[in-house]
Length: 265
Length: 251
Image 1 (cartoon, rainbow over the protein chains, first blue to last red):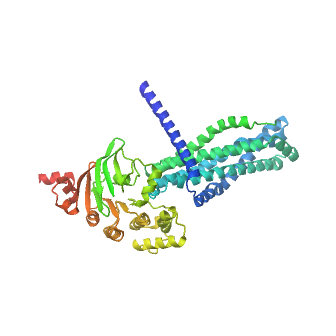
Image 2: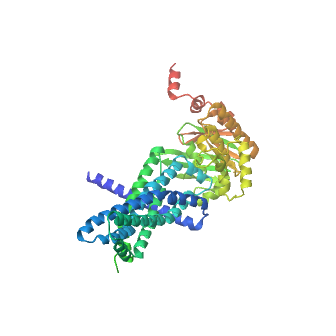
Image 3: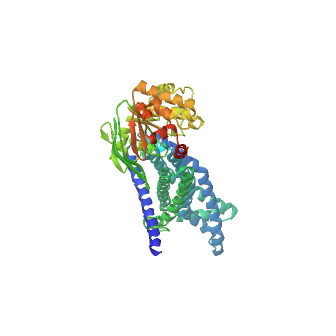
């Protein structure tokens, strides 16, 4: 009984280590390809459109409503303490450092990660990836490199957009709906929001982009067993990407807070 | 041209190939026949390096491809064209783009040259006027012909066919068989066709290899295959199941 339990736990742990190893090897292979092999500009621009341009609506809605609701909730609590005008500072710093990058990453994992995994997975189960290989095209060069580079460029831009829209939505709610004094709101926001808060958010965006693209592409490339396998790979890509974003966010926050400490200093 | 020595492949606990030995001379056409699930497609995928065996060697034009990695195999693969069982067309590309794909990847950028070569292939495959269609709008036979056009557009010295006539009606199957024969005569390529369609095997092959229980059980000309008295091969040729043979013997 105990031996079986340890066998199961050990097996799961080894499978997890193998999975991590495969994702890291895919990432290493991709970075090697970026610098050493032919670059496909057309595929890269297609992916910029797919990841960056077509995610605009999702990101704007996410940023806008998160900024609005966060502004309202902060005001409801702070106003009891007579600190209503500090709402702008809290909303701005929170969106820059945490809410903007995390929520954008979760939305992109759902929209783009799922699409990547499903598309590559379908190519895998219909032998299109074998066809690529048979035609002397290395799948990492053709499928992963354009997606990875497009993601690394698009994610920081999407997060910057989410932050801007979130702060703007928070401002409008605070000024026009909650009737906070606009001058104090802006003054506090500008005083407490530093460049390092924005840099921290964009750094996280870059890291989250890398996590999403490699987890999703790996799931697609290892999809098996027809439509069911593609469905499973897509679900796992979204779940694993989202969990990886949330877990890594904690460690990135602790690390980046050493480099870019929070608060007025 | 192609030599296979002692090829062994195990998937999970199942032994798919148990020591396959084959030699295919330049310009020759070999049909690999055998029952479904007998490892024919697995053997074919090994020949182009899409699968790695557990043991054995595969020599293509004097080079052992087994120790090669994907990058090294990319140097060998332009010599070999493969027609997949389901054609494996890129479903995000038109017929024209599918056929031009290997040329573009080889660095050809001149639209005039690309158009010319694609049209030449469409003519050989009798697919004129279909170039703007997406794969989803093609019939099974048309997909196979586009897959074949894509496989041979860079003029490989060897073509591998994985079940070229499976899932096609007898008329379309016959047109595919004639097409394969025509390609052999026109381009003089070495061909290996995996099939369990006996008409296809007899129509296109110079020699036939019968794969049974992971090994080459018979290797000879189609005429020798027809004449053999071996019960296993006769059952296969006549499409006779074990139950049928048992009941026949009792009767």
